[in-house]
Structure formats: C-alpha cells, structure tokens
Amino acid sequence: MNSLLLAANTAGYTTPQLWRILTKTGYFIGLSGAIGTTVTYAATVRPSLRTAERTGGAAGTHDAAVLRSRSAACLAWAGVVLLVAGYFQLAARVARSGKGMPFGDALAPDRILDFLRAPAAKGAWIAQGTVYLVQNLVLLATAAAMTALFVPAVRRHTDRVALAALPAALAVTLIAAVPTTAPADLDRWLDLVLDQTHIVSGTVWLGGLALLVALAGARGRLGDAAGPLWADLWRRFSLVAMVCVGAVVVSGLWLTWKHVGAVSQLWTTGYGLALLVKVLLVLALVTAGAFNQFWLMPRIARARRADDTASLRHLTLRHFPKVVWGEVALGVAVLAVMPFLAGSARTEAGSAKAVSSGSLFAAGAALVLALAVSLYATAKASDALSRRPSATPAAG
Image (cartoon, rainbow, N blue to C red; front, side):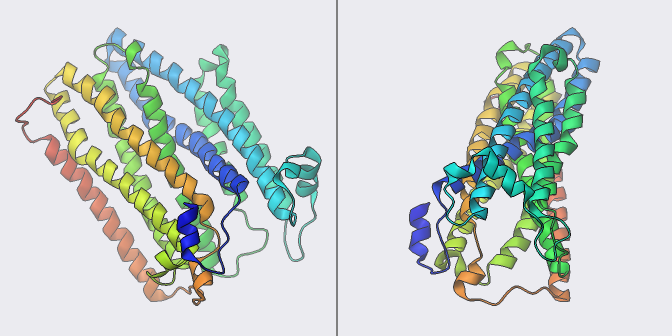
C-alpha cells in the first residue's frame, strides 16, 4: 500500500505513520464489532431464533439456545475489542493534537486527561475534548454492557443487553461527529450526515458478516434440521446487507465527489490511489454479495421448499460461510485502507473546492431512485431464480 501511495509523487500527501494506521484500522474494527453485531443480532439473529423456537419444536429450541449462547460470546468479545480499540484511538487523537508528540507519550493517562480538559477554541460552542470525553464515556458504558455477557447470569438476558447496547454503540460514532462550531452551509451538514451514514452502514455490513460466520462455527453443536433456521438467518441478513450496500454507495459517491475533482486524480494523487484501492475492494465485496444473492440464495430457497435437509444444511452451514469468510477478509482490507484516506485529492492536485448546486442534487436524487429500483429488482430476480426448477441436486 505504501508503495502505491509513494508512486503518486504529490507534494500534498503524507503517508500516515504506522501507529496511525493501526489505531484507526483497529477503531473501525471495534466499531464494526459493536455496531455490526448488535444491529445484526437485533434485525437478523433474534427474530430467526424466535421463529425457530416457535415452530421448530425441541430441535429448534435446542439450536436457538446454542446460537443465542454463541451470539452472547461474540457480543462480549466485541465489547472487549471496542474498549481496547477506543483507548488506542483516543491516544492517537492526543498524539495528533500535540506537535511532534510521540504516540507512546500520548498513551499516558495524564496526557489524555489534559487533552479532554482543554478549553474550547474561540468561537466554538463546546470544547473538542468535551465531545471526545462524552464519546468515550458512552464507549465505556457500551463495552461494559457487552462484556457483561461473559457472566452466565447475564447471558440469560442476551436479548435485552443487545438491544440496550445497540443505540449506545451507534452513539459512539455519532457523538464523535458532533461539530464544535456551526456548519457554515448545507454542504457541510451533508458531509457530516453522509460520512456517518457511510461509517454506520459499512460497520453494520462487515460486523454482521463476521457475526454470522462466527455463529456458523457452532454447526457441530447444531441438530441435523438446523438448515431452515440458517436459511432464515441468511435471508434476513441479505436484506440488511442490501440496504447497507445502497447507503455505502450513495454516501461514498458524495464523499468521492467532495474529495476528487477528476477521474485522473484517482491515480495521480496519494488520496486518489488509496480511494481507488478501496473502491476495488468494495466492488469485490459487492460481487461476492451478488454471487450469494443470485446463486446461493436461490439454491437455498429451492432446497428448503423441497425439504432437502441434507442439501439445505450443506449450503447454509458449509458452502455459504466459506464465501462470507472471503467477504470478511475483503472488509478488513477496506478498513486497513481507511487510514490512507487523509486530506483530499482536490487539494493535492490544486483543483477547485467542490461546490454543490441544484443540478447536482437533482442528479443525486435520480441516482438514489435508480439505486433503490436496482436493489428491488435484485431481490425480485433472486426470488424468481429460487422458483426455477433445479436440474441438479441443490448441494452439488
């Protein structure tokens, strides 16, 4: 990655230091764990487990209990990762606030306290340190709630803990985005909103994939009839993932327009090269998702309708997770690129600042509508494929 950025050879770009790369990547991994696992548990896992308990008899109740326990462990470990990543990210903020301060010095509690107590800048309605103080108090509370699931007595209330941690996990990133001065114009407001949309949708997508892969690791403890439960899990999450993809694309296009003034800047600036790598990785993620939607999901649906238990279990608990593991690896690679997206390609290339207009918003509205239609068409096409008769066994 560094060699790619050095190849840009632009005066306005500085390759981030290793500690910056590790802390920022770790922070986004922590957010993915906290936000992705809680949202996916609430929107996908919890309703599927309840359905299994209600309709699956003793076998369904057993499988639901296994996956709920596994989910609790995943949520608890996600809380640990969030806590550690949050501390190092806060230290990184301290290091960046002091000119030439070594990262090791920024880890000291007294340095962190000085940073959090710093007075507000002139014209600011609140001190930046106060914003980060509130954010990290919420982060601490979120991590504490999630790590409490290590305690067996607390695990009996996994649903309540997850639902309580969900808004708190979202607040961790939203609070950090609170501006200390009033945004000057509509563009600035959109920058804030769409940047958070990008972060939240991306972390839900990646964290959700990681949670489901981790749950699939418990297949050895599940009964032979666990296929329908997992078919429901993948079906529900595919809908969540499609919404996330739409939000990532729309917000990503806005942020790209703000920071890239010409297509050529994607390979002639450091920011552009980093963004190009990220875009290629995201496209690979979308391609893997399309494979799931157009090939695996229809096969799962056909096996479920045919009551082909063996094929359904193979597809949902062995074949599908292998593909999702690849998606998780691609997602982590995307997060590793994030620290390199510093500054702006426009600034490096000396391009004019991006200025919105009525025609731009009209084009954006048309794009959102077209994207919504395409996602709807994707869901319908996947459903149509699932209804086609299969010439070969579903598990082939």
